[in-house]
Image (cartoon, rainbow, N blue to C red; front, side, top):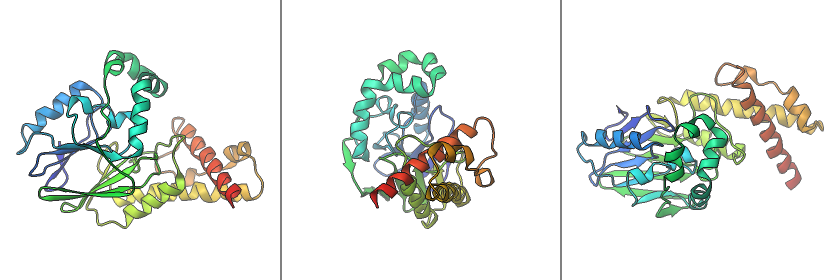
Amino acid sequence: MRQVGEHCFVETKYLGCNIGVILTHEGPILIDTPALPQDAADLKAQLKDLPSRRINRIIYTHEHFDHVIGSAYLTRKGIVAHQAVVRDIEYLQRNLGAEINRFFPDLYGQYQAVFDSVEIIPPQITFTRAMTLYAGNLTLELTHIGGHSPASILVYVKEDRVLFCGDIVDVGMPFVTPYSRFDEWIAALKLIEGMDAAKIVPGHDEICSKETVRATRRYFETVCERVSAMLSEGASLEQVVKTVDVSDTLPVPLSSEIAPQVQSTVAMMYEELSEGEEDT
């Protein structure tokens, strides 16, 4: 587990998302959860080496299964999230296996028994726009931003100047979903760039800097500009996906694995901008 602030730690080695640990006088607060029970057991073992080991609460940065699935292995109380998480966890309880199999069939095949039996714990404390948690000696500022998902939030540990971003920030290609909103995502990235954050913790991969945030924003803004230009000329979705080239602004080198993600982003941007034109 890597220390990123006086009270903040991050574990990046587990399957799924990064796990944040914030040490408070009232016990550790976790940011998101491990996906597998063996990883949750490893996390508990690491907490035993810290001054305060009993988990105080968990904060979900958003509703996707790789961030919320491990709550039952850790604690069932004091879970905090955006209000929209409640509905989505109800959906996951009924469809978790199908969702994992849709995105990661090999993973589902390997751990089917685990995923078919796990209970995902919904939050007991929710908010809609912003919330401040005074946790003993620390102040945690939670802000709803949307963008990557409807329930995406930021968690800022004021005293340590550490910002947990969930999947709104990614060291590699930003992972978009059918429910992503680029106007919100770009606004969130701009917000992060202006924050007094000494360390930025993404939802996956290693700790990053504001340059990673800027690179993602520039990528989305370039996609928006080039799609918008073609849309104003009456281009169809098929024409836009086939024509728009953003290889000069990608946050990672273009490859056969990256290309489908880029096309998906271009297509979703077209749909979002088209909706905006219909509303005006």
